[in-house]
Amino acid sequence: MHTCDFLLTIISMTEAPPSFCFVAFPPHTKNSCILFGKNSARPRDEVQEVLYVPSKGHDPGSKVQCTYLEIDQVAQTHSVILSKPAWMWGAEMGANEHGVCIGNVAITTRQAAEASKLLLPMDLVRLGLERGTNAKEALQVIVSLLEEHGQGGSYFQAGDQGFQSAFLIVDRSEAWLLETVGKFWAAEKITDGVRCICNHLSLKTQLDLEHPELRNYAQSQGWWSEDKEFDFSETFSEGDIGDHCSGKETLENEEELTVESVINVLRNKSSVNCVDTFLTTASSVSVLTQDEKRHCIHFLTGTPDPSRSVFKPFIFVEDVKAVPKVQSSCAEDCHHEHSEYKHELYDAHQCAISLMDNDKDAGDKLLCTMLDLEKQGIDAMEDMLNSSNPIDPAEVVDLFYDCVDTEIKFYK
Image (cartoon, rainbow, N blue to C red; front, top):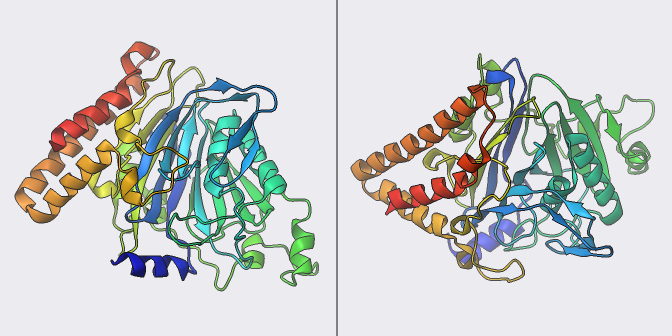
């Protein structure tokens, strides 16, 4: 698509791109673990990097520059692994050292998105991970910042398009579904079953927490009256309320969900966004152990199209090795075209995709090699989960680095 046509498409968008995010609880999952996953739908030429940020203490009065807005920093931030569009400060999804995972999806509502450059919802994902030791604490971080600063600004580097946002915030024991309309919000606590979020409001009448002025605001806009039961989706949705989420039925009907089965759901074409303007630019799956003495395991692609990407494991331990090959060489504050943000893994993977598109035999052979590499990683992680011995940090400190390095070598 021509650049001008692409920009016009972005600018004229009324619907949010269809990302997909889920959480699954025991007994639907293997090893009594909680599973979290996300496909990130973004502009198809946008590069998504994987960034590890270690925990850090900050001086009193310190500030942090988010994508558009500078805010007060906290005294201590946690270690995080982020899958993020390379041009922005915030992240589409990620996890922290305490076993908290957060993903967000763009949604459209009756409330127009704020054009002012405030906090992007992706900034709120990162801030929640850097500041929350559990899911509820991360939720409180996000809503307090939302109420103080508001959300606003373009979701895309090209064009000027904003949306409201929904967040799935998960830890080792529970999840919170948070949906927002400007500075207003509502949340539901989830402790069992399977829950998916897509690009529509899904909270109904079961609200465990909400903005204190939420109902007054809805009433002032003429969207709700006190003589009617308060239904969040019905009140704030624009047009028909959707309840379909691609992949939801498969997740709910699977007898026992495993890392491999949920990766396959993310790879299924019904869950993968691949159109002229948008693509699933990165994906992730996290395995959260309920025993806090055991490590959580996070699988990230760092490359687009999960059906032709490798999910690589990452574990939080001391002195995790940085992985420059999945990080953009462009500084966070520069403003170039998407091509300037390409990292080494992205470039190598694009060559592999080109081979698969143009030489079926060679492409199929390479894809089999990629999937075999992934299977080795999943099997090794499965052995760790089933072992009675704790993980030796020395064995996994270079885990993600080595997987990325090996993947690139296969592409060459």
